[in-house]
Length: 316
Image (cartoon, rainbow, N blue to C red; front, side, top):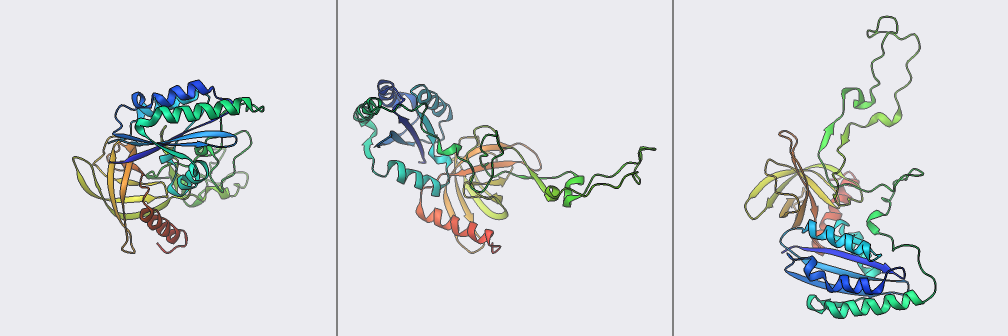
């Protein structure tokens, strides 16, 4: 059964009693969870709780309630599974590496530990003006953020869409004669085509709630099998990143459902693991599903990293 990683972070601005009540109520807030595993991190300036939720599908409505409750406690809610594995592992190591594990039925003990630590932070003097930062809202590496704009976030794998004819290969729009209104020579020389218009396709904007895809997406055509409880389907993945992939298919599982993927790579290796359906494109010609990788398996991560490195180097 798949495991979804979630976390909450607090500092001295959070009311300790509210945080403790939230932790003790996790079982009621996650009714579909088959099991819970907790890790409490008590650090010099903040505190955190990691929650590993074992569930048959992604409990989106319950997680949205969790996020709202964390916000009310003055904390920051993080859907860890939305981070690619390398970033997820780094965040876990720096935030929860020295943490204390608790079983799901030990929520009371975890709540008391957090309450006591946050109480000490509140009395320590400097009181933060807001909750800790969310790693999912960090800028995408290598991408500049214009002044006054929200930092760009990466999108999950999505289907490419052809650009209009006047945007292919950097073509400039056809000039119109000002006297006749028909195509012809203009009275002034046309401006050179903008350098930025050399793109050959546009990308759909990701729907709300899509996971972060931090890093480069590559166009591919990879043989793939995916399994649900009802279907076994052989298709092709059209693009891939370190966060997930897009599959062109007429078989479209419901959003938030979990599928098992088996991707055949050109070098003979295979990517095998769980993925969650993060969005569905209902188009008869270009439709399919966007999948976000869930696997925490080291072999899966290393295999994916090697393949993406080969694509970046022009070898894939």
